[in-house]
Image 1 (cartoon, one colour):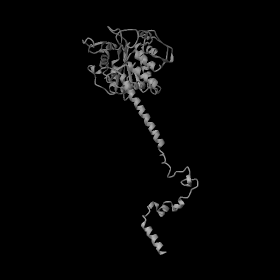
Image 2: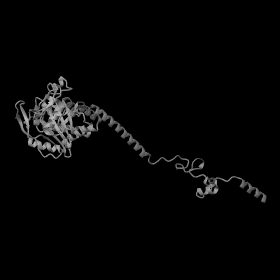
Image 3: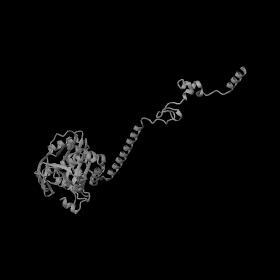
Image 4: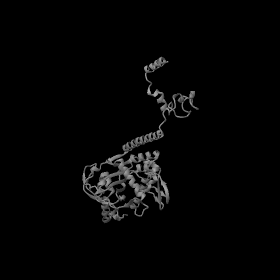
Length: 397
């Protein structure tokens, strides 16, 4: 008996010890005190062979549980993808639009410029350029076929700390055209007194800018010009512009023929509206009021969500506007956007629309016929307020 016990004890001592995890005591401890044999008993509802956790439960044999934030990750990736797409579209649109801008006016050539004031000043010009028009277009639009180019409208748009001020300058304003060198002849011409629109016909945008600066003392930061064809195409791309008239309007010379009330004008009708002046008692001044009203409304519609958020409408509007819009060499797309938003602000009531103060709207000149004389006392005060970016207190006509 003692021999058997000694042999058994000898064999036990000669065998290698069990790993801790296989020790019966360790197994019992890790299984909550349940002996290994009991832990291996079949469990109700278990898997094959009756072992394992109940069906549908999470056991050691199942795969890792999916993170609770996986749905958030999907949303995040989707949002990131949309941002990347929008960024790519925005960048491509910017370069496409920038390539269409016609930066043809070199304001660095303007002589004897006044010092820059506060705020930003845009000289906005509507010319009678027939560029892009066929003979039939000239007939349909009642533009005639006059050679050369003149200015149909001129406005200074000032933006600054007191909102926007849109100041119209009558094309028949009797002003001093400073000395200049002819673009074609190279000949030097002495200063003279003529109607304002002669400056453009004599020396183009650069001489017009110099003449405006010379007579107002206001430094022009940017120049923008649009001709007949560009104006018509822009309005048509917008789908027309909504205008309300207090009274009927008829002018055979421009082709204007409108009833009183609110109506949508297409490109051809819009050009007739902004060019008519024979029905107005004050002619050119009345036409400028219509031009201010129309351009502000056009800018408001062009910047509306129905245009900006609709690519099928936005791209044609941008393309038609930039194809014929002539600006200065330093005009950026951001400057153009700022200009249009300022024009929109005038319509929205956050700005002022006015005409330079007039002393005599029927001033008879020696060589140029009827002209418009400014009220220089009021005009100088107004120009000073704009230069200093102060609140405008002067009332125009």
